[in-house]
Image (cartoon, rainbow, N blue to C red; front, side, top):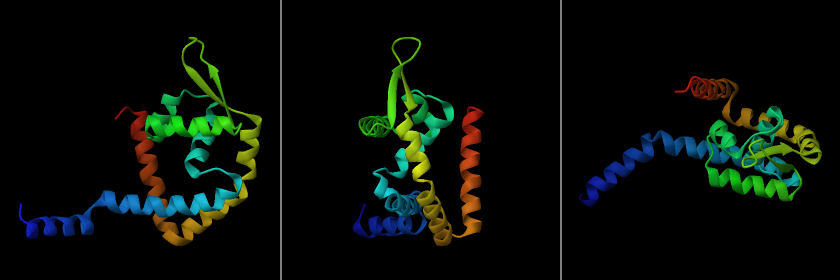
Length: 152
């Protein structure tokens, strides 16, 4: 392929690629939350993991990967960091092999403590993106989670 064609295709990707645009939006929004949560020593990915474990009263790492569409290595790395900080406890499953993750009292306190700053990040994100667009994002996420529950 000659350079002119490669340049043309690159320009098309920059202008039209949904993945590039979604990843840009993701990085900007993640940065808003991470800055708000920095004083607590936690990142928004970790908040997502802690929250989902706390709602379920214990999960296996693979369950988190599946529910949050996260890579196993990312989940493992975050679990280990949160365990070292005392926010998560790892117990053995009834089969004696699998690991079950449980939020510790310190982790639950952290989730309570960050709430005010998490709300500020929510509001800043809504101001940045717009209320109507936030509703569209919520609907898209709900559709993804619903399709996962149906096994799609």
